[in-house]
Length: 124
Image (cartoon, rainbow, N blue to C red; front, top):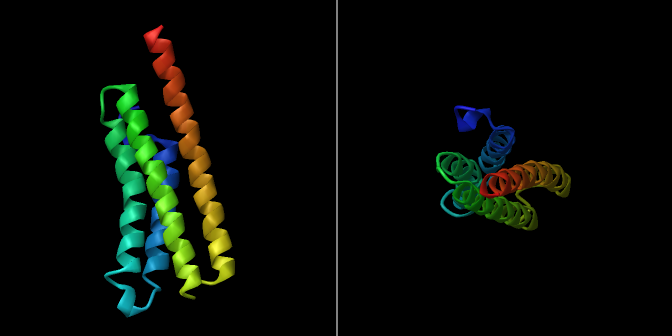
């Protein structure tokens, strides 16, 4: 594998990020520098940290960046819950976005597990 762009976890997170940007852009103008900005930043952090971890030379560092990415995934979910609480998205939209979040989480956790196994194989 030559690029983080080939990682299934990055591809899944990218699709999720694109959905978050689309969602955030539907928020009211007064949220531009608040919830809109926070949602976009946390969603970008998911893919950014996967990419940065891929560029590290040690599996443990890659795992750590993936854990940071996972934290950003949960932060993004919290922003979506705030958006639903403020009636910027419907409960139905929230349910769909939660499912996409869960899919992203499953793929990311799978990648972290893979990295842990590879690390253990190398250190034996």
